[in-house]
Length: 326
Image (cartoon, rainbow, N blue to C red; front, side, top):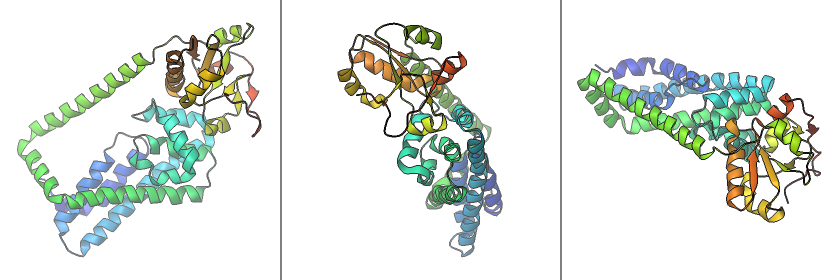
């Protein structure tokens, strides 16, 4: 039988471990745990004054677990920079877009993005090491991260308290179904995993285009006219890796129409980014081709592949002198 008293008694510990695991990138259902604990506290204590202390201790446990887990990734970002960002993107459920989305949020809001990061899938997991990589001061990081975890946990606990009766009924149904409930949950999880896998396959197929590798691009640089090379990494990523392929022009993949108007459509265009699988570069290449560009190709492996092939890189131009797509 589902015991709300037991959950209410040990809820703070359960919440601490759940939020800590989720912050470390483990597949832990932290939000459902918080909602369940919030409902159990409400049912077990009712309108008693002890409910306030239970909610407060649970909220404190959530904030402590979240900040401790995030500090691990913050320190990883501070020490290892881009390597840590690649690792967390592999853990993210939305790794195809997590890098660009997070960098844009961070570029606009800075460390304050942590206050709302947990409400956006994939954002928190990447924003935390990005703060470390961008040398955000530790006290600012802890303050914003603690505020963000507390806000997120408060809403989850409040939802549990507000819908305590419905959640209690749900657990009663699950208890009645017994092992059949486990089968339903397992089937739902399997369907969700299948959906995510099919969605990833569809995205990969949509982005399947002709690509160019570093050796091929190096050979084209001796031709006339030279290919146009677009660096569409974010300013934050260029801060972490302050080098470019020689002759590259800074561009934004959202400004394809301006690029088409500025360049001869018969030239070869090569685009590189810092996304897993060159997603942004492939997406921009597709848009350029649909806009009338004859040959637009993503660079396989980006600037890392160029460097690994033994070719020279150039330092990022000083502020105010950057070459941008006109």
